[in-house]
Image (cartoon, rainbow, N blue to C red; front, side, top):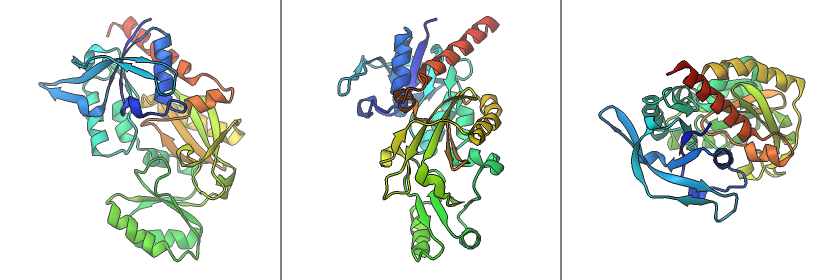
Length: 320
């Protein structure tokens, strides 16, 4: 089965291919003989009810510094593709949201992975709140009195922007930390969005586990251990990946989330678990594929393409 595939992503020339999950997906698609095209979100066009983009033919190589060849750009109706991979990185802002509205015009006739409607409706730090019993105590607000009351109850807390990414602006505040007022003022001046405030989970020192689910099923995991002088385990912030296995609690979390992910068409999701607590459900542009494989885990890119091809075959059988 050869598919005509477009990928919507950030500039491919700038990615670090060693850890980039989008690149792993493209390598696997190319290995299977799928035809690849590439465009950045700013090249989307909606005109007279049709969504097109200035796409460029794409060839990829697993060679740092020489990983991509792009052909000449041409405007193509995106509904002519079999699959569009929605793989631009956050921030999850109005620009991002706008692209999901445009891709809604072609999905599901063209299979968009992940489903743009549910990407829009499932921001990482909000979707997770549908499962409060799996989470540490959590507050989402801008209200100072509510944050003070939460802090008085739990003492040691973490504050982070609701739509933050990559560990940016994540702060731990102990009960007696005198920086709380200044930090609140800084956050309030920088952004109009709410913050996520959570009870600090000390087990983060042992790692923040990224667990990948493909169409709602567990596919692989990697533990990310923060540097000794940092709270954040994100690999872009110095976190060190290591091989891992799932605990019984983590398998229960996957089983709970699986049906919700499948129902929303969120085929590729990455969840974060610290000390047995679910902290995020990442669906915009999840990462971790290459790290899992590097530690001897499954080839998740292949699992994702198996599932995409299965869905396209089902669509062909239905004749729609």
